[in-house]
Image 1 (cartoon, rainbow, N blue to C red):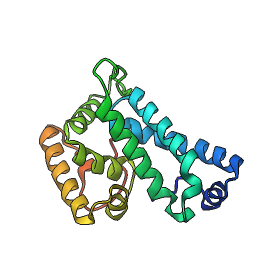
Image 2 (cartoon, rainbow, N blue to C red):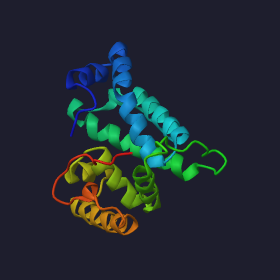
Image 3 (tube, rainbow, N blue to C red):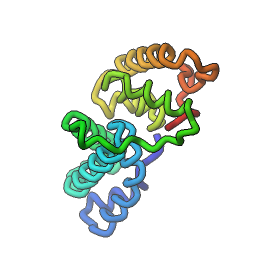
Image 4 (cartoon, rainbow, N blue to C red):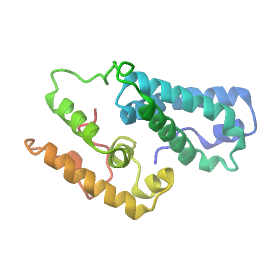
Length: 185
């Protein structure tokens, strides 16, 4: 897993160094926004969820017992806030779709297929392909068993293959490696 922030910076933030907390928030913003936007399927909701996650990080980072736990914790915070935003969205509010180049039909179809997945399958898929997490890391973030993560990934791949069967290149649905999807939205 790529670290969200240097461990030393997290240690300083835990020690209540306000400049370190500010730097920490700046360092996680882009990834938090991307992850939340991918989970919610909306730029507006993703931004709101990422902002809420950053508020929580700012408020609670000093309560972490170990800097090494920061990565898993911040994923949980973002996932929880994105799920909350997704649950509470209204149709009128969700007016800003994720920007996808209109000339890239494959990306648009992939995004639509991803959106069609149930939340539990979509969450593990997003963390695996877009977050580049290993199954054990996803299990820790979502607080589920690793076997459950593998099962959900298998089910998601099967559904996505069915949705995207017209595409010759389905390499982004590979089983054997944990590389970031080549067709990331």
